[in-house]
Structure formats: C-alpha cells, structure tokens
Amino acid sequence: MALIVQKYGGTSMGSPERIRNVARRVAKYRAEGHDLVIVVSAMSGETNRLISLAKEIQAQPDPRELDVVIATGEQVTIGLLAMALKDIGIDARSYTGTQVRILTDSAHTKARIQHIDDENMRADLKAGRVVIVAGFQGVDADGNITTLGRGGSDTTGVALAAALKADECQIYTDVDGVYTTDPRVVPEARRLKTITFEEMLEMASLGSKVLQIRSVEFAGKYKVKLRVLSSFQDEGEGTLITFEENEAMEKAIISGIAFNRDEARINVIGVPDKPGIAYQILGPIADANIDVDVIIQNVGQDGHTDFSFTVPRNDYQKACRILEGVQGHIGAKSISGDDKICKVSVVGVGMRSHVGIASTMFRTLAEEGINIQMISTSEIKISVVLDEKYLELAVRVLHKAFGLDQEA
Ligand code: ADP
Ligand code: ASP
Ligand code: MG
Image 1 (cartoon, rainbow, N blue to C red):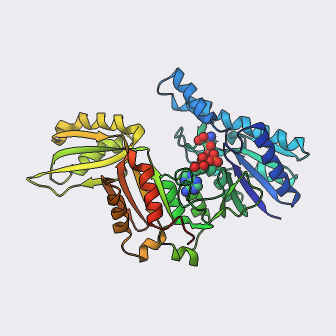
Image 2: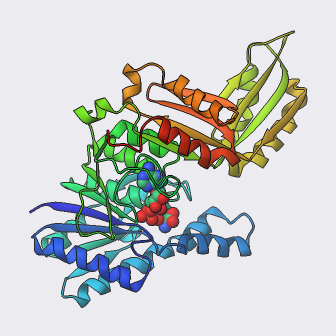
C-alpha cells in the first residue's frame, strides 16, 4: 500500500464523462489499497475563458481580483470529482487551496508555495477518504486567494507529494508521457521511458509545457518520484523523471527539442562601448520586473556597440517604452525589435561528453535556409532564436537530424 498523489489536467477533467473516467481510475487504485490525494485542474479552456471575461471588464485586470476569478475553475472540478467518486461508492472530500492551507507568497498570478498544512489531508486519509485538492491556487498570509501561474496544478501536485512524503506523484495528461518534442508539432516524436531531472528542468524552462517548470524544481528539491502518464490509457508506464543518468541516457546525446514562441527580441543599436552600459540598459528592465533571457553584445567598433536581448512577448511593448525613455541617457542611436520570433532548443546531458552538436544544429538549419538571429548555450542545451515562421520546420528537421525519430 502506497501514498500516491495523482494530478489530472484540464483535458482529463474536460467533461462529465471524463470526470467519471478519472473517478474510475481513482477507484481502481483505491481498490488496490492505496491512499490517494488527487489534484485537479479546471476543465480545459475554462481558465482562458475566465481570463477573457476579466479582461472584458478591465483591460489590465487587477491581479488580486483576477486571482479571485481564475481560481474558481478548479473549485468546480474538485466538487464534481468528489461527487463522481461518491456516486460509485468511494468516500472523498474536496478542498480548495485555502481549505488545505497551501500558503504562498503574495505575488498574485505567479505566487510561490511556502508551506502546506497536511493535517486535514492526513485525517481524511486516515479515515479512508480520498482527498481532492484544487490545483493552481493557494492563499497568502493575509488570507488572499493566490494562483501559481499557468500550468500551476502540476506544481500543486508535486508540492503536495513533497509535503506528504508520498511514494509517487503521477501527472495524468493528454499524452502518454514526455516525448522527444511536442508530438503535436512532430508526429514522429517518441515517448521517453525516462528523462533526467536536469533535462526535464531544461525542457520545461525552454518551453515544453507538459510540466510546469516549478513542479520540476520541487521534484528536484524534495526528490519526489515523478511520472507523466496518459489519463486516456489504462496501461502504460509513461515517463519517469530520474535523478541518475542511466545507460540508455548515456547513449542518447540529445534527449529532446523544446520551443517557445512567447518571446520578443529588442535591439539597442549604437551604444557607447564602455563599462556599465549593459547595466544601464538592463537595470531599468529588471526594475520593471521583466525577465530577460538571451543576451548578445557585439565587440565594439569605433567606440560603439550593439546590444540585443529577449523578453517575454507580453512585456515587449512595456520594455520598448522603458528603453525609449532612457535612450538619450544611454546614448543609443536607435531602438528596434521584433515580437515575431521563436526560440528552439536542443537538450541533452550527453552534450557534456560530445562535441559537434552545435555544428550539426547550425548546418541543419542552414540547409533549410533558416537564419539564426541569436544563440545561447549551457552545458546541456543549445538555443537559437529564429523568425517565428520557421518554428515548425526547424523543430522537424532538427528532430530528424539528431535521430530522435528512431529508437535510441
Ligand atoms: P494538462 O492540461 O494535462 O496539464 P498540458 O496541455 O499542460 O496538459 O500539457 C500537455 C501537452 O504538452 C501535450 O498535449 C503536448 O502538446 C504538450 N507538450 C509540449 N512538449 C511536450 C513534450 N516534449 N512531450 C509531451 N508533451 C509535450
Ligand atoms: N487551470 C490552470 C491553467 O489553465 C492551471 C493548470 O491547468 O495547471 O493554467
Ligand atoms: Mg499543464
């Protein structure tokens, strides 16, 4: 008998029939004698609907009130799943984030979990009940409802598993595991039996939305046994996130390809090439709480240089306005940019011990006539910034070039 946390995503909770399906799976695990804590997302599309509704009232919704609105999606599904379980004779009880007391900081719409009270959940488990918890939401020290950022139910799941010291955290979604790349873009993508925690962290941070990055961080920090599975299949081992590189991993140099279309590029042209210039450009951007990702500065010529960086696409206009405000002070000749870019990354721990990955990547893109705008590397990834129109093509040809469509 084990304690298992299962998280079901929006598609898995998308209709009454699918909720009944989830209830049947929970009942099966219960019949095997396991203790279960179930974390659920809102029905698919619901969070988007609630955000649009809020924007109809207020163009830039007040963050506190936005959280009040968007947390309701998960309040609906916890209740519905509890009913579905009771309907088939399984005792269950639903909890909102506030009722559990998933304590977070007060950063509305992107709050971080600080502490989880496990008392209520433990009492219910002891009484033989299935505990159902609303994903994506928490409460701050002043009692305000908070949310954890899009895709945040994954993080609720893993954080509960860590707090309860669960034997396993199972993330049920609409694909049967983590693939070499998004199977919706490359149909030849293959499911990975295992992926290292480090690689999963890179994949998630570089745009693979199958797991929210914070959930992977939690899993790493608390050594949670984490598995991604399909809620539409009865069998299947899914993908296990491992903490050690096994033999198979050593053979595969590249494990996957991630991509992200949520960024924009900004160029600050003709700035004086002198100490402090990067700080003068990026300081005001950081002060406005805008994340900067890929950064490039050219070698100076004639005492001037060009400086480019990427920001989240949502923050593009704001970042441009800030720079226009300080342009005179910095002494930049011009400020330009492009919000129709994407970032494509190849990820793999095998890169550490293999050379030539970058050249294969660049040659493959060159052969398709795809221009690389920016490059950024780490020990286990290479990212390139491209024109957005090349995204699908780039991912497809790189997937093939690195042999990811074939069994490792
Ligand atoms: P849920 O609602 O269950 O949380 P998400 O839509 O957040 O589901 O995540 C699952 C989706 O992630 C898949 O449908 C798939 O399109 C996408 N995805 C992106 N990259 C990958 C990948 N490498 N492996 C599997 N799925 C991926
Ligand atoms: N419902 C939230 C969202 O759509 C959280 C989640 O599904 O994980 O982002
Ligand atoms: Mg998700």
